[in-house]
Image (cartoon, one colour):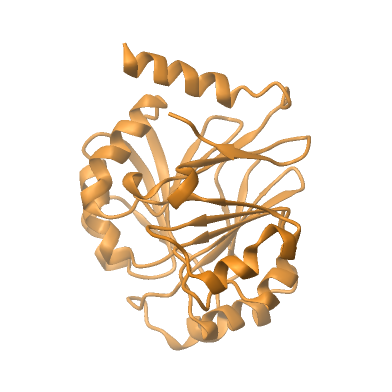
Length: 262
C-alpha cells in the first residue's frame, strides 16, 4: 500500500499543472540512489547519467521500477570503472539500450551492452526532441588514450531550454571546457560531486543559470556554497545532501525545480 501511494504521488508531481504541454523531467538523485541524474523525455524515453556505485544499485533499481522504467540509455561522464559493477546488476532487471562515454570503454563492456564512444562536439539523441551535446576538454581529449578517465561535461537541450551537467573536475579540466566551448549558457547547472575548487566564478559567468543543483554525498565546501549562493548568482540553489532528490522540469514555460518528496 505504501509503495502504491508513493508511486501515485510521484505521478501527480510529474503532471504539474503549470506544464500542460510536453515536458522533460530531470531528477538529480540523492546519494542513497547513486547520486546520478535520471532524464525522462516527453516521449517517455529514459536516460541515466552515472548510475553510481554497486552498493546503491538495488535502491536505484527499486526507484526505477516505481517509475515503471523498463529500459534506458546510460551516459557515463566520469569514473566508468566504478560504475561498471552497478551496470552489471542493473542489466539483469532492465534493458540497457546503450552506454555512451568518452573513456573507459573496456570497463563498461563488462555489462554486456554496446558502448558508444563520443568526442567533443558530438550530439547524442535521447529522443526525437531531446539532444545531449558533449562538451569535452579538447586539449585533454587529444592527449589521452581510449582507456583514460576523461571527465565529460554535457548539455541537455530541449525546446530552447538548456541544462548543463558538470562532472567532478579539477581547475585544468574546467579551464579546458571554458576555452573549448563558445556558448555554455544554460538555464540549469547541475554540479555532480564538486570539490572546493569546482564551479569557478568564470564558469558561472559563462553559464548564467537561473537554477543550480549540487549533487553531493556530504556537505559541500563553504567556498563552493559561497560562489553558488543565491544572493551572489541570482539563481535558486538546491542540494541533494539537504533536499534529497531534486526534480527539474523543462517545458514551454519557466524552468521549475523542486524537492522530490517521497
